[in-house]
Amino acid sequence: MNKEEFEKIIGKRYANKEELEKVQYCGCNCCNSLFKTKLIKKWIKEDHLYISDRKGNMKVIKEGYTAKCPYCEDDNVIPLTNEYKESKKLLRQFLAYECKKSEDEIIIQDHTTIITYEEVQDRVKNKSLKDYTDEDIFDRYIGYGTEEELNNPEIQKALLEHGYINELLEMSNFITDRQVISDILHKYLLKIEPTTLIFGQATEMWVIEHLQKPKERKLSFEFLDTDTGEKIMLEGPALFTQEDYEKYRNQFYKYKDNLIAIVRESNKKQKLLCFLLNNI
Image (tube, rainbow, N blue to C red):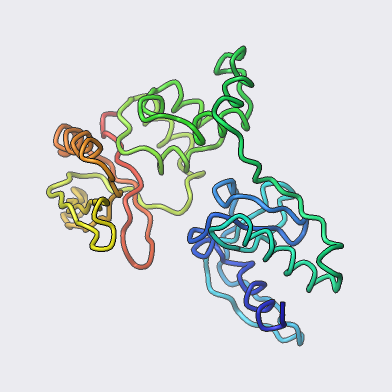
């Protein structure tokens, strides 16, 4: 690794949420951990953060959110790539350059071990849901949860209680249970990564075909904010089968007149995470 490559990576340590959302793997140059970006649960809001470059000059970095490592809670997480082997190699090169050591001297704390469904089931088979650890919940339901399971209010509550509210919203299309919705709005709202809640009606839904990926259907919505009267364009989820599309369409037309849209801004677009039924 040369100096230019090193500086490019180290410059992504702060206000790095957008960069981390683009890749599957990241690393911590404090505890040498390699892990999946979806494990990041804590963020620091950066308003006017000044950092020093290698020459001691102070500069302002862009506003945003800085990730905290899930293992040491330091704010030195760096985005890597979407490939496991490439990410591990890149992290090793980065740490070797920073520590002025050979790559063979660098020990990576690898937290990316793939666990099979059978292994997860064997681990939790004698546990009730209330006795699941954070790791059990993550591996069983975020790793291998079915659509039917993720629509189960008891499992939704367990995900919330174990701190996986962002994952629940990203994996769900519609949340309809009154108690789960109340908990999200009144107990867990501040734990949601930067989002906007829009109360209103979904007035239109379009299906956008992907030219390079003909099997992928991207949904787009026109959503009426009933508080302001403004119509907002929302970018929806990608659906890959006709069956998925039919299920989504049926739910959409069932609930569309009374919804809360949970929206996150991404690349200047309003991206829909999930719809909540406005029934509380």
